[in-house]
Length: 517
Image (tube, rainbow, N blue to C red; front, side, top):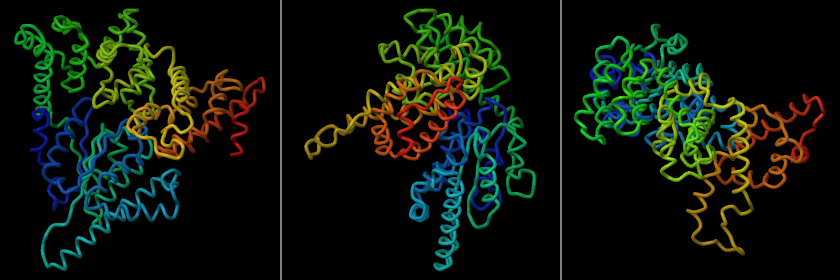
């Protein structure tokens, strides 16, 4: 979709930001929902990877609300550091990580000071690299350019934890002569972000309001309409005629000229059988929430047809309350789609495409507004978000019961390595990763303390028979930090429920015993 972002490359602000020697070290692009900010960032990244970022000095992160891996300042900086560590900064980043690890051990990234640890590593690594480059240039007597690092953060407003810390890091490093860093960040219009980035103050940052480029954005949306129409009509009989109808219909339905509205309308048409798309165009809503509502109605109208309604309902619920984007096999597990045929499963995903898509083996929302609609306005998440969290807790318990056991990797047999099981074991054990990491999170969020979490219930049985295997699994997969944090949450949750219960229910016996470990 080069035509949808090409215009941004020719703007004065972006050209100035790309120049290594320019004083513009921070560019904040902002606009309303669906104005194509993420699409523009993807296009800019493609260009930077060909030129400025070809030497391993480019890193980026896409923040996403509701995804624990990308919705905090700590996670964003961790992602940027991991990418920078593959280039010229590798030696400096690894040196300071090793120094911190030797002093604090694994806890350096697990306690409340994790952000400050990452910040210190980032600052020291970039400063030392800049000093080394300056010395090399002075020694050689050459006037070569120092390495400039290009860092891109999309959707700053979806950083739910530590946003002020992240804004301070961006603004301070953009203003510092000790590090050669250029930041490109995007968000909705937020005064908090403007203040945090020192935009309009004495800092080196500039703001770029996408609303000031209405003509360019409109042209990009038109190009996107043409592409969507071409994709929707290529499998239709009389494709050229259908293309003209769909293109004309999408142009009328593009609402206030946003990519989001066109994308949602196109996804709604993909959920319709061939031959019915032109007629469906006339019924599509002209506002985003209306499109979500119509998509919900199409799913509800399935009734009991092949059980598809219930499958779609479980799939949407699982994606909406999951702690991170689900891989396809995790979605199949948590939504109980396993009994379906391959074609039936594909149909469920197609029917849900107005809310989420499965690409690169991962289910992602088409837009943050889709998650918001499902969690706040939809009647499909039956009957409540908390009950859905409890369902996922129970599903995770069942999944772990079927996988966790002694010698899960089957790595030894009478003292000898068991041959030929490595790849199979990895696939089998990977299916339980989400369940092992997040089952406690779902229980705590659900707030339910019933027969499953009391003595003799499923939780007690799991802890009595699978607790050590659970710890072993997390240790083998490098998740002991999550194990400790989750265990503390579980104990705290059950203690509160036991104290508050009117009938004096005690902690499960298994919990009481494990408290002494």
